[in-house]
Image 1 (cartoon, rainbow, N blue to C red):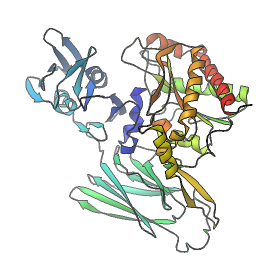
Image 2 (image 1 turned 90 degrees about the horizontal axis):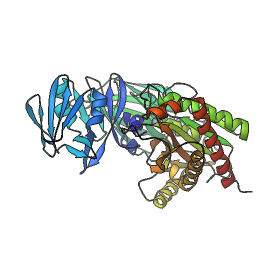
Image 3 (image 1 turned 90 degrees about the vertical axis):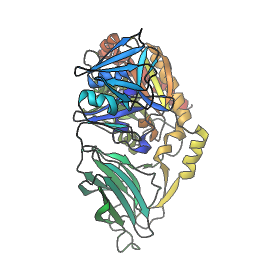
Image 4 (image 1 turned 30 degrees about the vertical axis):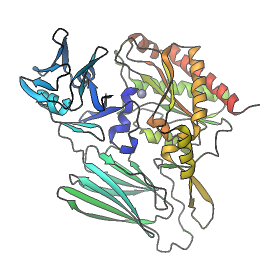
Length: 495
Ligand SMILES: [Zn+2]
């Protein structure tokens, strides 16, 4: 799973940065892949093993000399432990920090990629530090900086795009989609406070789009393009109210877009279990991790999710929805938004794991950790609850909770749920030594209900890969998750 901060960081949105384990997102013609990062002495380091896997290079260690040679396209890069200089085909290249050897693995600072690997491979590698993107080859990945200026009678959303890039705005029910003529976006979006024209701004459904979720006062828009400065273009979208705003709106309320950053809360901590949303990890162009024998995580997760749905429907008679029914790409935020929109009482995300160490195996359960102390986050969630006027002249107010703090309100229940899942899994399958963990998992952040993520085993372990493909093992996992849900239902619906 560590590998799959990918989706999160794909577009490098700063508020998406609290992903799963940190990684660089490598964007190439072939798509997006994560490259794990380890922070050492405040520097982003990348393991040489991971570089080899990602770029097809090979390395050989000389323990006596304290050095490592990486071979790339027949060229040699020579690293010496603790030396800030590497040799690339005989040419010396300085690095901001020295290569390090830790626990038998070699690490190089991320700058090694554009400075040394790029020239050895004869390949353009563009490292963008803040969004942690590595762009391979000549891809168009403009930097897009977003700003929202709220006036009393309109709101202006401005995108400064470097380099200047063609854009197109499409109106959809409840949202505007801004399409950039690019392969991907290096996006910066500020936290947009709840207001009546814009409910939220998020990455769109494809890597080159941004979605603006529209609020109840929005009626129409006006687009203006200009030059921001040399090389940068500026697109301003002005969101306008209807000219007869005082009168009740004649049109139905806009449907909140699924990727809005505000969510309508359930009436508080779950008081019953009626609806379960199961999230089969990855899908479409996001393959997830891959086993030694080629098993794809995205296929295993969908298969287990289907088995679990059948069990829950037949044994408990609850409503069950899957965030994807087939092999398709779904963004992390859309997955939890789907659970919110279906008023799920529990959200379960299913993944399979991978590790560099082939021996690693066993199942693991995760629930969200938030960076601030839990209590503070919950308080913030409540402070940020706000109300919007509803359409049609009514005075019904809707409580809105900031996306970033939705899950914070459910951490205790999520921790209990994760504990039940761990106990149930332990009776059926082997568990990893770290069976329950807390991580800042993006897919759980916006879930407005108790939520957990299950890594059902390691595809990087050959034996476990074999198990994971069998109906027997998948059924054991599904049965364990069902047992955990039964216990959780007893917990939240005391007799
Ligand atoms: Zn995964």
